[in-house]
Image (cartoon, rainbow, N blue to C red; front, side):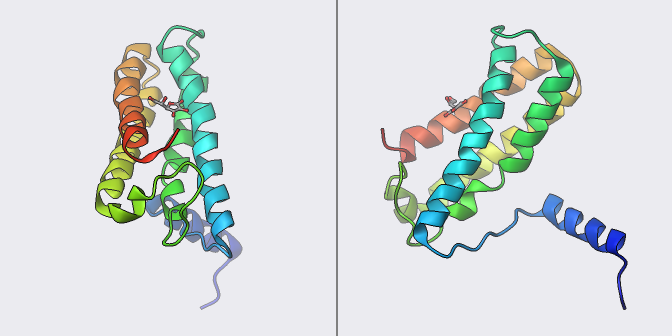
Length: 149
Ligand code: ASC
């Protein structure tokens, strides 16, 4: 059956929402650049949320909601970039030796980022603050274990 373009777009966006896109990398450098780029984008949006959560920037509920939604969407992406044989960058080799532990860390982060987005949607600064700390803690614990420098 021939699908209409809107139907195809709907199917594609549903697939994106339910599972992270599994990128294919032509070379190891591409995987490294991919994961670093996704993490960099998240850090910018997370930084904006942190400034509001910590009272360093004026709380703007709409901006917080948008930043948290981007964080939540991009949160699923970097992990596929830690593909087999792509050691490099700041990633410790332990990632590939303890993949289950690394996956636990990334899953916890994805879970907390989703909660942060839900909290941001309430428009309540207290809820944003409450969800920000646990999310930052998942970043930190993974960095402590698996990032060098
Ligand atoms: C950021 C960022 C990190 C984390 C971490 C949280 O914005 O770039 O690496 O938050 O500092 O503890």
